[in-house]
Length: 312
Image (tube, rainbow, N blue to C red):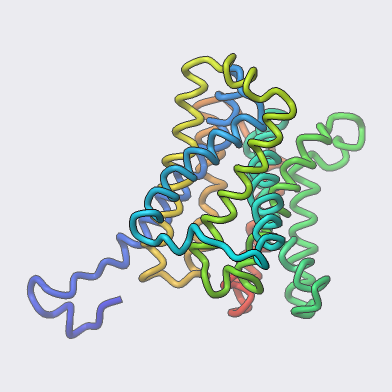
């Protein structure tokens, strides 16, 4: 943010805070397309695993190529880092993508996005289980609100009467928990000192795990049967929402506090609902809207705690 004196000099010190805030909104808009696009890829012959694999390969190619030219050290790792990096790749990237893509092909996209945004609640549980932080009353209240939001989002009582796609719901929740693993790694692991290297290595190791899975379970045959439209959608998912969204967020964080950016990025929920309506014709249910309001409230509540809010 530029000072008043800077703003007073013609042609100098232009306040770019609005542009940086807009970059976060644009990133959220791009992220909101992932669910509907994943459904389109599925309808064109892809599977949740192959969607995740192609998305990871495209992102690895773009980010890895940039790192090779500008930051080669991010591509290297030490032997003692292998367990940590493998965990980030498997649980912080591969499970996230496969779980989310599984969810969007089995349950409404809006519900999948809402359940993914329970990730801050998983972070709370992770910090308590790791004995890194204590469960404060504020965090306990946020946890209860979030769980209530999940209850409404999946359909409440009607979910108990057989109208719940359990596999889809578990996939969405697993993707949220997987992102929490990545966040915890950023706070207490490699990401604390080298966030970009952790980001890149998670992609490399996670995509490697998906390649092994594809080789064992015949992923090449599935990829060969994907129609051109499906390939176009998957390449888009890896390039614009994944790499482009991350780049926009990094640029925005030069001026926008991370807590503010995290809250603004929750507009992804609204964008996902909008894109799902425009692309797939999905209209969010009353329960999804109620659940979304509670989940958003729970995450906003966490932002009141400065230190924890930075990780939300």
